[in-house]
Length: 520
Image 1 (cartoon, rainbow, N blue to C red):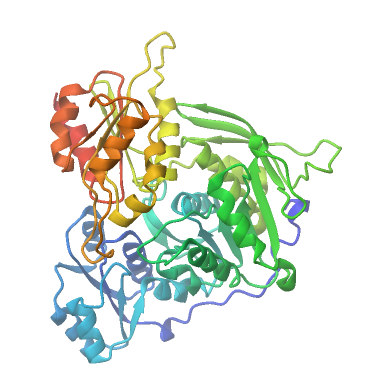
Image 2 (image 1 turned 180 degrees about the vertical axis):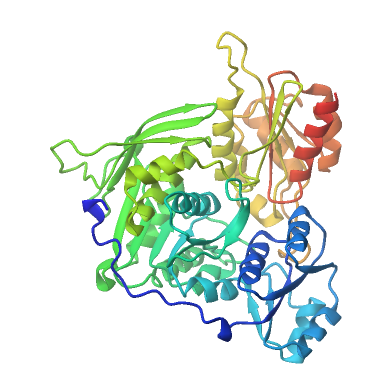
């Protein structure tokens, strides 16, 4: 154990789950979602009989069927009625499922025990020493990095991630160690169900306008989350004072009095992001960043006060197989949390080199006919911007004398209210792309309030105006994702890179396009 973290293993003894106090039969409404499907896997590993329902079939649903889960497509109150006869039942509902859902209504009428996703996950997480990863972006990848590194270090940690880990081929696992790492989502204030020992804040930006009434209200939720960190726990937070994306973290931390509960706050950031301030000094610095098509290399100066230190300090070296500076930040946040667990920082960074990502996070869908197609879950302007910035390095051919390929961004906006409230940010997010296709906004029924919003057509007009081009050479609006297929097949050239982005069903396009390119 590093001398910098000699107190890493102090704390209360771990609380074990008593299976006799948990459910025997669990029914999950909306089981196909990322968080709900992960929760189903945890219940299965606990020996529960698991059933579920969802509006549509999917590979995720099929994978749960293979594990023994009974799943019906479509919602039927009879599915819940049969639980009344079961011993010790529980109904879990996704936050995306409305109260008018027939199964939800039937469960209430029958008086069955009901929980939302976060409450159900808290039953697992609050029985362990938990690392909870929060933030507007980067939650899934950071959680996955920590889970992967702990497993590589020989720690059989439990985890729940909002996506399937490429290396572990699952989104959740119940391990034998005292540790658990979870993704702590701010939507619907889900993260207020947890009492972690370690909390990570990757960033705090305006989002979820359909739920939070204002940005201060959303930031207050993050403050409340930090208030749930256990006494003498650790808060890990990014620090980039020249970035608007981190301004929210500064406001959140200003309202958290860490010394009252013995909390340690550790900040991390890039060397070129500005000077420290006396209130929140950065302890972990990142520099010497070199990005390349296969990932990146970088250096880290841990637990180092740049304002006062005169002597040289330890330098750690990192290497990633996933692209983008944002993933370097995620890796360093993970390393700090892992040091608290007792894993040497360099050992943790070495483990990160073997991390190959999460599905739908810059995932290669195919490489055929000289064209590489990637899919990504990006649906917020910051996510779009950093993902495209990472993709630029992919367009560089192996032969340095060969011309750089074109970068295509195919984007399906997610939610009308998000597109409207962050419209100007979206206009600036596509600068790294050579060509842009924007499909109609994906808005699940009942998810957001009615209103008059600027949509995809207006976004394309603004994108072209930003480049002082009124032609369709930069950006174009194509309503349905499937209709973009013919355009792409006609215009894609050898060396091009296509990045398909969005939180909706746009991911199907990436795989269908790859399949057609294979046969071209």
